[in-house]
Image (cartoon, rainbow, N blue to C red; front, top):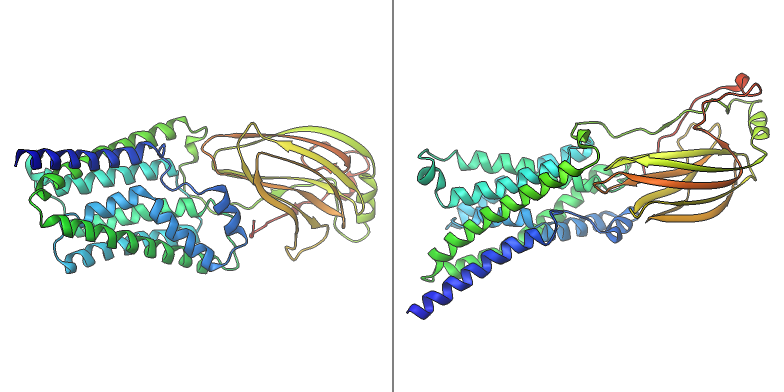
Length: 396
């Protein structure tokens, strides 16, 4: 009997240790998407979004720990269905609403709160409110819904790291959410089998106690690591609600009205070289453009200090008001080089997205027949053809 008890205790400690290790080993990046996932989803359809949602949930251990905490002491299928449905509705609402309206919150802080939610559910499971605080616990249904809303923000911040398509945005979000639910159901079914089978054993009470304390430790570690990441982020002031940014390029040297395009093209028919440094804050994006006349060439090389950025190298014809742009190359990399011969006169350049928690600096070297759009100086020949060009790329 003593041997069995000792073996059970060791097994319980092993399970708790695995819970803690699973958090620590991921360095607090619970929802990180690989670069391969990002590239695949750029050109993928709704099935790709669904697949990514499912795999994302199955690898999102903080969500799984929270769901595990919910079902741990629920004995009937009715109770399990009720609370899991409440959690599902909560995170679905904020996932869809926040992504559709481009509401962006600092993901370090969101994940820190998610870590606390794991602690909360485990603390409630061990009846901590009555035992240690001598108070009645809050209404569990309301708490589950509220915490589900917070988890939805966490899922949304990761989904918004992708260059979502404006044309099918809502359908893509819904597909991603359906994948999330499929992944959750798969994990939930396995958890229920394990917990139900173990519940009949004498060791279940000891296991449940150690497992819930393990959840508290794991949630606390997740909270501390996310707050550490937040404190070291280069732009902690990014914790704001904002709209999807519109990239605006102001060009004081190029006209797009009839009769002026020829003068603009004449201005750039000269060889020049430049060394340009561009800084992109953490979790932000930026565009940088040149004006090239039709047939002009641009040789370029750019690199970062190691951070990989998603980029789209593209151009827009001068005078076009339809929003058309041509993408020449897009990928995710820390450096890239090449030569472009413009097939039309207009703006040409890069859209970069920095999904890392640190600021990225790009060193761009260029040579060719172009005009820089970031220079404020106006020559005598160009004052008569001033104009502002707005470029928005909803599909980037």
